[in-house]
Every structure is written in structure tokens, then in C-alpha cells.
Amino acid sequence: MRIVITAGPTREPVDAVRLLTNRSSGSMGRAVARQARIRGHDVRLLLGRGAGSPPEDLRECTIAFDTTAELQSLLETEFPRADLLIMAAAVADFIPVPGPQAKRRRSDGPWDLRLEPAPDLVAAIAATRTPCQRVIGFALEPAEDLESRARAKLARKGLDAIVANPLETMESSRVSGIFITSEGTTMRAPADLPKPAFAAWLLDRIDDSAGP
Image 1 (cartoon, rainbow, N blue to C red):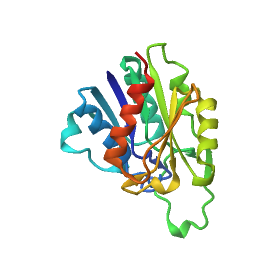
Image 2 (image 1 turned 60 degrees about the vertical axis):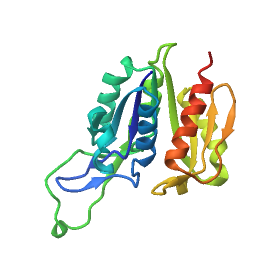
Image 3 (image 1 turned 60 degrees about the horizontal axis):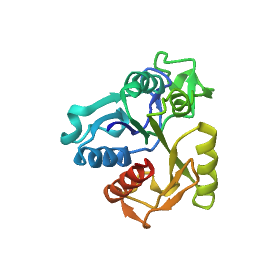
Image 4 (image 1 turned 120 degrees about the vertical axis):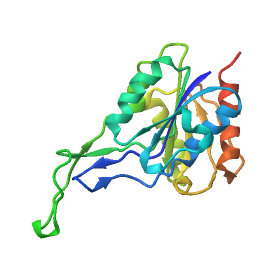
């Protein structure tokens, strides 16, 4: 398969030097990309610059992005040629308005920062897929509401499947995840798996859910 995998955070500038971003390390998406390459798939990794440089073995298949708009443009280019999109990136929910300006100084006094909702990239991409394409999203939610919120997100965004992870996954080397399909199948990974092992488990579930 040709698989597009997104990983890491978006970074939205608020002035010439400051950014609005999140704590995503990109480690989950990189682990999935590495495992997909090991299995012989044609991988394209879209990696947020806030997650650092890609590993050496993924460098030639990686494209960097910063902002939500940059990631959106890359998805519009890469997804039409893909069989599968795994959307592991932590995309901004809000974007500063107006856009980047000159560096604001402390002497300028208080600063009221206005934020507007960002476009929903995975829902927009899912709406364009053909019958031969699949889109898998991620949900990062509190453990007590994890499954119910992930199911709601799966339906709301029109995805083929979703990976539900508790908030503790962020910046951790381990994950206790759930794979939920649009057909209603729910599969729980063994608890507290290292992310490379979870990536292998996840790709097995994705292969199983694809059918014959």
C-alpha cells in the first residue's frame, strides 16, 4: 500500500518569534511509519518541525510542515495518491488571528490574543476519499471518557477507524490504546505497550479490518 502518515505538532506563529503549539513529540507517528516501512509499504511521513528531525531510515520519505495550513496543503497533494491515511499528527484546534506580526515587546503592555477555530483537516480529507481509500484518525482524550469520545469523533468526522489514546500518551514512551472501526468493532491493545510495539499491533489491526 501507499500510506501517508502524519506526526508531530502544528506550530502557529503569533508574532515574528513566538508560536502556539502543543506537546506532541511525533513518536507515535514515527513508530507507525517505521513499522509500515519494515512491512514493505510505500510510506510518506508528514512530520511537524516541532517534533525534530526524522530518523535516518525515514529521512528520504519525510516531508516537514509547520502550520495547519502547510499540513493541509501537503495532504491535498499526497492523499489523492494514497491508499491509506493515518492521521497521528496533533493538529491545532485554534489559530491566532491576525497572522504573524513584528516581535511584540514587553514594554508594549498587555496582549489580548485572539484565536479562531482551525479547519478540521481529517474530516475534510475523509470527505474526499474514494471507495478504495481509508482514513484513520486519532483521539486523545481523558481515560474516563476515552471510548465514548473517540466513537463520537469517529462518526462526526466520517472516518473509517479511529485510534483512541488516553491523555497520558502524550510525551510518554508507552500507550494503552483502543482501535475502533466504523463498523463498530472495538479492539483493545495490551496495556502499557511501548510505542513501537503498539505501532506493530495497530498495523495488524488495520490489515485485519481491510478485509479480503
